[in-house]
Length: 378
Image (cartoon, rainbow, N blue to C red; front, top):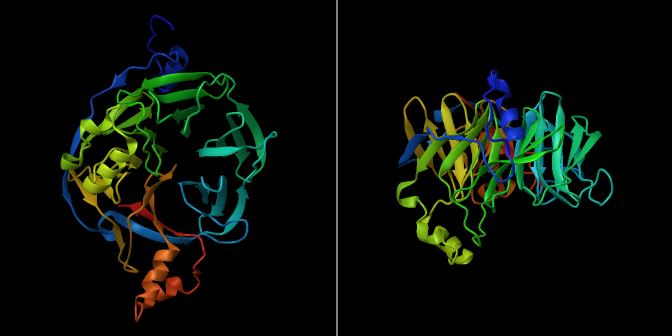
């Protein structure tokens, strides 16, 4: 590693300089001037309190578009890109829900993969990027589903879990090791460590279902056993927020090496402890995120208050959801998952359905894909 790193005159190039100047055993300076947030209260939340518009998207269901689980939602160019880790597939829809195509090229040859770990977009050049193996590599498609390139990671010593893309660089998290954040420069495929995880606990293997790295106006990330929310921008890596969950903060005892993972899971189940922040969305007026527990948190930057919401209630149809995902590459949207199973439980247990809800359910079948409730902030 170079002894010193010259300060760039052009701040927009700083990320690239940091990536090329750091070896895998060192990290970039972290801006730790974070805002501390304390959870003020827990309350129910109607969609009209936070969002100026709510749109239900019925993702067309067919033999080629049957989704088992929605792990990530990305949007660009009036398209929705849905990542399903269980099916090792990416499904592409129009933003109306009309199915376009899917990518599922399981195999061991060129353009194929054994496992699919995550997906991201390069919105500047309209590219869909899959991170997969064997070997560890990026498969690059255009928005029409045509494979246009493949980038292998020849020298990587351990795989990463989740990725994002900005400034010609992939940013990848390896959540279960001390190497928290890696940067992979696309042109050279050089891999560097930008940040070490200060809260790594060997042998504790618990992971929530959710995204630790997201992208809207900038790349935002978090990690297990760390109540901080980080950002990568043109100035480098900085801690944006430190969250105090009060009585739900995870006691230090449960992150020791000699604590069994099953004991930690049970403690979090019984006492509702928070050990991970996931699915972060950060815009001009609001910060919203989930945790390993059900529900989500919203910080109003105007009111300076952080509240926990067990679910969001859609006032138009009087249905609720507690599962929130960021809509990657949007400036102002999040998505809530509405399970078709949930809708049919309502139908079975109701003598008379609300007229609007009946209209929503009129062409929804029990084995259809889950609905997306896409909400745009005020």
